[in-house]
Image 1 (spheres, rainbow, N blue to C red):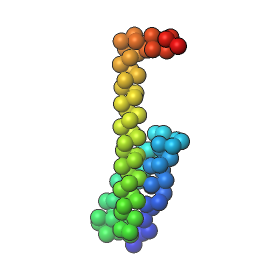
Image 2: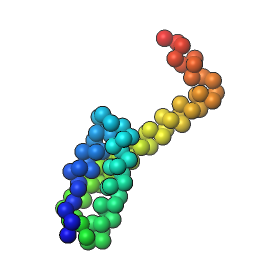
Image 3: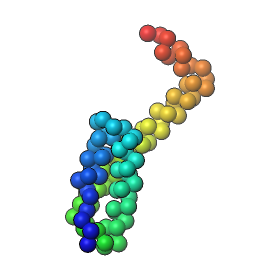
Image 4: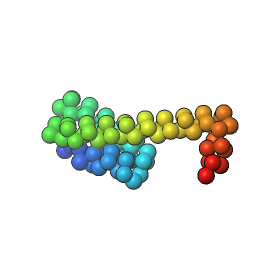
Length: 89
């Protein structure tokens, strides 16, 4: 059986909120998904399932937040409101 990478995935998920943003959120999500599949298949140590799930969920949340912010930014830019938001300082 392969050893789990739960601690690494959780650290990547936490770093996505604290420091690195989407640069660590995407790997946390992808690695978490693949590791959970391997755990279900019985080829990876299932002891790190909780850590892996937590890291994957943190990565997912951060990715969704980045997409939401990007959509709002593009909508404001398209409506011409972006300049007024930054000029009200």
